[in-house]
Each structure stands twice: as C-alpha cells, then as structure tokens.
Image (cartoon, rainbow, N blue to C red; front, top):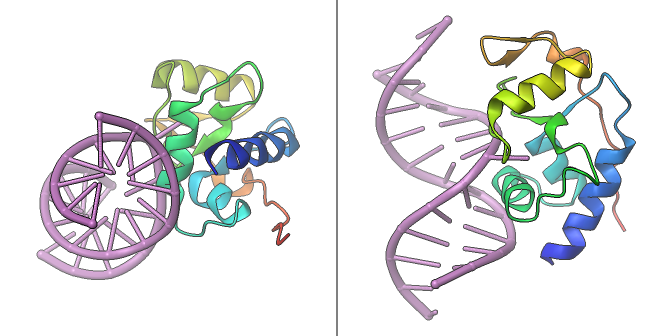
Length: 106
DNA sequence: AGGTTGGCCGTTG
DNA sequence: TCAACGGCCAACC
C-alpha cells in the first residue's frame, strides 16, 4: 500500500504547475485517504525522492510550511523559487496558489 | 493571533 | 496484538 500510494503521490505532484502548491490533506484526499494528512507526510519522509518529484510544494492546510527532510529552510528556498512567497514560515496568498486535484475514484 | 489537546489514518517495532 | 510515532488537522482556550 505504501509503495502504491507513493506512486500516485508522485503522479499527483508532477501535475502541480510551477507557481502552485498543495496541502497534505488535499493530497490525502486525492489518494483516497481523507483525513490521512499524516499518512502523506509519512510517505514523504520515509520514502523521499526529491529528485523525482517536488515534495517541497506540499504545505499544511493553514499555510504553514510544515516540515522537510532536507530542512525547512531548504523547503522555503525551493518554494520561493516557485514564486511562492514565505513570510514568517507561512505561505503568502497560498490559498490562491493551491492546486486542486481530480479525485481519482478508481 | 498563538499555544494546547484530542483525534484522524497508516506505519513500524 | 499493542503502543508509539509522524513533514497533520480542527476544535478549544
């Protein structure tokens, strides 16, 4: 289950256009695990392949950066590179940068 | 607006 | 099988 979800996770993350971001909860829903935000974080932290997909685009629902395997500072820097302004470890106007996925029901 | 508490889902030992 | 842990979330103070 772990691997399968991770694969979907990668697929979803790759759909995120530059300048946009998403949240753990949102991803969880897209994965078919509503409320499993923690699960998503777990996936990203245990099987992190930053070279394969932009996991730094994933932030918390309230706009906070959350955490990052490579360090929050790094995450913030990457987000800034994606036109996402971080202020006081929170994303500015993140609400309109959130990318909505198509719920795969499969 | 910021800190704490309990609950969510799934993994791991 | 049980208990503890997470890159979380929402409700409460």
